[in-house]
Amino acid sequence: EVLITGGSNPGGCLTLKYDAAGVLAWSRHAASLGWGRCIIVDSLGAPTVASTAVGDHTVLMRYSSDGDSTWAATVAGVNPVGLVHDGPGNVYTATTTYPEPPDWRVAKVGPFGDVVWELGISGPSGSRDLASSIAISGGDALYVAGQWSDSREHCMLARVATGGSVAWKRFFDGPGDENDGSIPEGALAMSGDRVCLFASEWAVGGHLDWSV
Image (cartoon, rainbow, N blue to C red; front, side):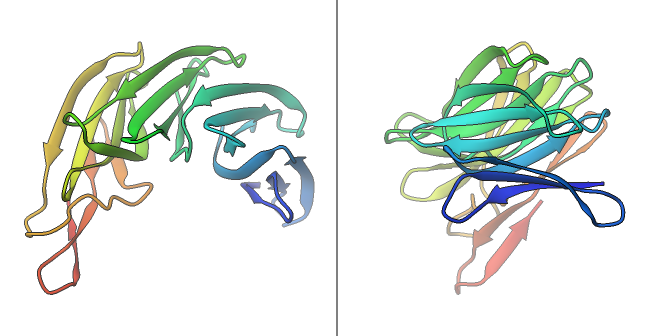
């Protein structure tokens, strides 16, 4: 089975499920929302979708494996960059909050759609901070990556406890001399308790380099 989410014309969040033979099993359209940005499926085949709402919020929607709407939860921030879940069924997402200068926002939503906590994460004072990816390690720690910028762009990585506190933040640059923080979505990989971060930078001469 395959589940996808995205948008439709003239608008709204469209979620589709196809069976193993490629036949459409069901489709759901949330007309009042923006395009679906990310999706995750639990062990029972029930998907959770994150979509930016009209305004400055993100809406998480849970469907059953048959496509029935189970719950919807609203959290702060726009442009959700990923969804992860833990064993008990909690769902986590990372967004970016405005107005300027923007900051990261991480939210935890319980198995029944209750917002358990929301946490803001900032870079150095006055910096513009854009979240780009989120991962979970062993169900007890989240890793959020993105960029912070002043006159240049830089990488930032934060470890967040599933209880809602920041354990640490790390700031770093790539080996080049120009911008360092264009971290693509999905650029965090977990191996046990180790996290691997992939980033890119515009190097001298205008070519694009990768850093790990």
